[in-house]
Image 1 (cartoon, one colour):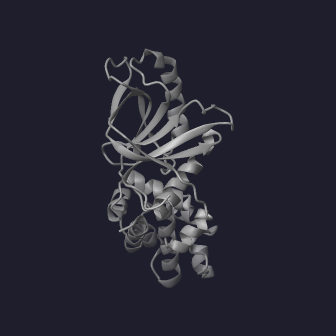
Image 2 (cartoon, rainbow, N blue to C red):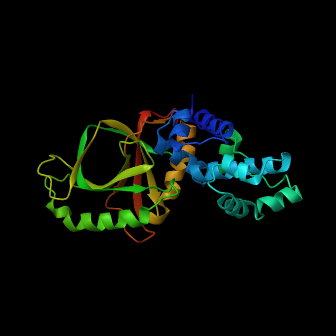
Image 3 (cartoon, rainbow, N blue to C red):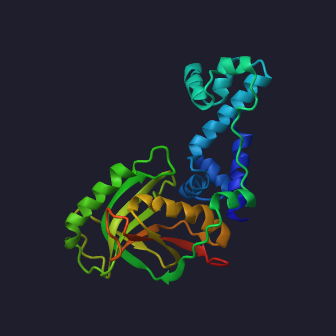
Length: 295
């Protein structure tokens, strides 16, 4: 089964359970993809979070009920997962610019937000014929030392990157000279899921070391297993890096036949990186379980 079919299977599960509690963990399990990576792929494909999509589809389902049944609005609200008719009405009006009562009176059926169907045509539409080939390379086991935090990424409604990552890097850069046995060349942003497989992530601001001892106070050691990576070049300001990551997760993984092994992603900052300017290069690498069938 490829990523396209896996994501569509998860969406089919959502459609079949719009009147039930839908956990993001269960949706990812239906796709047989780890929760963060499913959320990352979904956000890259649709430019909205999975939670937002589910809420919007539930509201569209509620609109169908308003127009085709005599169910009370409070019952429809509860089925859609809202704690009160008031909160349902606010969310409904935000999407459709009408109250549930007014929508029922008008009987407009063309307001519903259509469900997404992931197929080859959809991919062609969003990818706009982009074709960027990464460098494929292998690394042995590596040891990193740095400072870490937990955060929520762009694929979560709780996204707090701006609050978490800049202060982490500021603190790490102030103490990086305390790290011994540094492998010269690059600094790394290392992103991986927390052990609970939720939408909360771990981020390390780190350097590679040849010997993981000693570990300076306030820092952590991280060992990454041997892996094959696909490394992509991002030209431009750090603020636009997410555009390149979206390409990786919405296009390259689907088209290449490669598989992410659900290990840590790497932001790689070398001599070409110039912070706060557009004249800058960042590399972004993902670990592969299966190599690409083509570039």
